[in-house]
Image 1 (tube, one colour):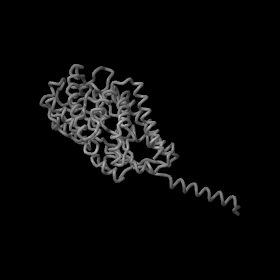
Image 2: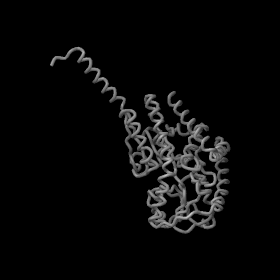
Image 3: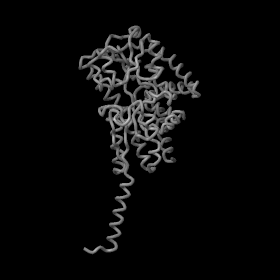
Image 4: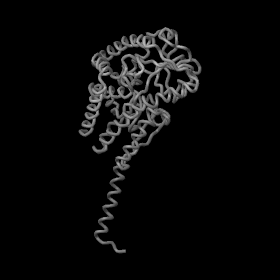
Length: 374
């Protein structure tokens, strides 16, 4: 068969197009310190996000996940991201207070000044990030910005011993997860704080190293803590409320700034649009699907599920207010607007839901405009 000039041109163009697509295609490395089954950090958040950006970019962007700390260990995340070991990583800024002092008050666990549900929790985290530059500046020093605020579900207390009220906490060994302010609150409750990494929680409850702890209800079920603990206490001001940690307990999926800047503008926008969808959907599903499922399964396994009286929950909240003051004083000492930040957070938790949506959308629009101008 004899090639005409037109046929040769077509072949050359076809090869060039394939070559261009190959050059532009990029596989993003995601460092997940948790197991592949973890909903908050992977299966219901980053995984559907990765699938969405691959589809919308026609395969030019793909996501490859490294689970259970196989690429980056949880505690090493900030330094590892700074040198570019991954393009995305799931972690909490609270575990590195020296790097992220703006996020410190995420450890003040107070059910009385909590966002009303996980969705409002991530909305408030996004709004605070948008309104106070120090949040972003601290992450940028570690080559990151927050791609997804991974919603924390309803907080509740799991225990090996009965702790039906505040007085019952006296003398108990309570597991804390991070931050000096979580420890300070525990001390005010006359309990002994015991810092315990998440992978060691099951064994600590089983062996009696800790008596009780407050953490996300879905995570309790994922870790099968009902096998080693007898009691689950729901701690809410009223039936319609959730208890969500401040600043979403500072959990987020960070995106590598250098990687992001090197992507075409249209891909940056797709990434942000799909991130917003992923974080919002999981936050809604937390309240409507995953928390009820977790409580039901733990109760079915024999765990006794009860609720603290609202008056006892308010006693807890009264102690937490003094810890908020400790947090704002510490941030003020570091040159941060700690008083304004804590006050604005508590103002947002009481704001009308429609206004929160408006501010949340504004924060995301600002991030998209930022991405266009990189």
